[in-house]
Amino acid sequence: MSCGLVWFKGAFAAGRLVIGQAAESLTNMQEESIPEEDVQAEQVPPTPAEPLDTDEAVDSGEVPAPDGPGADVETPPGEDAPPRLSRFERRCVAVTNALRTLVRDLYTIQFRRPEGTAKKFKVQLEIDVDPEDNWALHFEPDLLMQVKRQLEDAEAEWGSYIAGRVYDFHADSAKTNQSVPPSATMVFSGYDNFGTPQWCEFSQVLLDRKDPRVDKLFEARAPALNVVQFGKELKSEQLSSYGKGSKTYSLLGQIAFGYLFVPGAKRRIKAGSEKLALTFQVVETRDLQGAFDLRINTIAGVYSEEEIQELLLSDRNMWIYRARELAQRGLDRVKERAVHAKRAHDPSAYSEAMKKVPGVIREFSKSLERGGRQSTRRTHHAEHRRQKDQRPVHKALEDVLSGSLPRMFRDHNRDSNVVIGSGQRAHVFSDEGCHITSFSVAGDELDQRVRKGRWEVMSDEAAQALRDKIQSYIPPKRKAAGEKPGKPPPRD
Image (tube, rainbow, N blue to C red):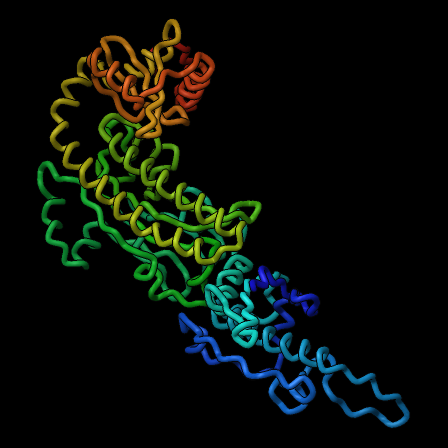
């Protein structure tokens, strides 16, 4: 027998219990606090149910005596005694008090916020009732975990995420000077005790970890390197009262990356070099409507978010952009499963979905490593091609936007779109209209992919919609320069 979803808001009726007291009132209660080590336990073993004594259960002390409404109090002389609660009413009060204490102590231990700063929130529990086992109650996941996750949702600030900036918990803002690295070669190194972002040189990250690859950073043709770090390491010094368990900006992990090449024409004088380090942070946040979200936040010093995006879209750094896009798609799949689990009130499915995040981060790191090696080998060829003005991004836009509608296909294996241009050149675009890569394809190879069902011919309507997205994806600076369809973008 499953009791399904049980709501707590202060009263018990028909197997549903609903509790919605303000958390500020919870912190003023006087019950004995639950020890912290009990709160942190992962599993709570079920306690065998004892036979119910329907006459004396409450009065004999098997159910805690209530200290809230319904408690026995002395009646002042001359006043009528309040009506005595029934056995079931007293039991409801006792259960309510026990749950109130649990929620209050969990909140206090998890966030340690100043008294009187919490807002109202609801807690929803899922309980299975087994009449054949003496009416035993089973929680899956355990009761503490169910309450803890909902407290995290209730505490999170909505819409605090700002792309390209780390959240500063000490200032409760992502707009502080500490939210971005102070120099172009620095990456995020963790939060301090008070939730303030800390930064250090990318080379120092490798040195601190005794990474044997650090010498390669100083070679003439230095390869791009990256370091994977997870939230537990990055938040090890952070205090609970300064956002350690907060979902306002929950840092699940990151990749510290160095170095990205910055062309001379785009180099900032204050950057000090052609090198740029990046921090790719995987974060859980809440949007303006309070909805769960997973994002890759790309953080860099000196350069703005728009400038970083343009650098990643350049020929030399396109492989970094592709790796990030693939990782974001992986996070989107995790998010879809997690949101479905939340809506279905299935905490176990939610946990299983979130366990996929570390794998997405590691695969992102591997993609960057592969792309870095290939980029090093391609450098000479890319320079030669650039001299001939045959850069794939420019050729792709020219093939798509000039003249009549080109042949377009949907690649079901890679979830992307393929445009066939001049000289049997295939250009791959994302659903958002961003160019991913280009390659040559022979006529029989194209037919083979269509025959095997890997590529599917797009309808004229779908092809035109994609063409519109590709055109609208041209950076605003290029549009402002008066670029027209069919005309190749100006040189970077």
